Length: 249
Image 1 (cartoon, rainbow, N blue to C red):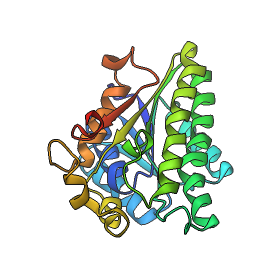
Image 2: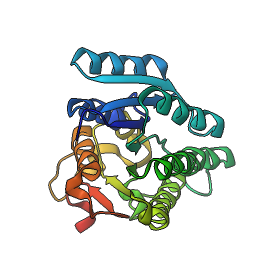
Image 3: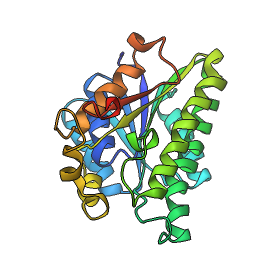
């Protein structure tokens, strides 16, 4: 990584996104943090700047195509290029299929699938015009294997996110753009804590992970950073599990 490169991180105000923003800045990348929560987003910027890094916060609701378009226009105006993107923003989608409301189902897809596509659309257009780039989507092991009942909207939206990753890689491989994904297992975040009621949270997961350990946001961000790097220059269209060996079981 070089100090003149820029990365956009959606959902960068908390959890995996916040850890990724801090990790990316530590390597010298300029970081654009996009999220809805201004207070936490600006706090992450302050943390990065306090450590000598470069970052800015741009408020964005990724379900709004105008806001997504403006996000990338402003990032381009500020830094001159968007070399990398970490599409991390996501929400849960709890509830059994027979009990799930239409609104809850639509909301999960609005963020986890449609919102991802809206970001990809702008990123791919921008990177095609500038001659290349690298994108990493944050999906989930739930997008590769159905694990727990009771989170059907989340599972379905993440399966679709995996499909979008592979299609984007296929369509743009000849343009110097790589599109890959990380698929985290259980990670120490507020979302895992909140999943206690629906699926049993960390306790339920530990019985399914060969290592018996819950992962950290930093472990996910380090894999994303590798996927951006020249060391992964021949890696495209892949979904990399960051899951303590769960997908191998």
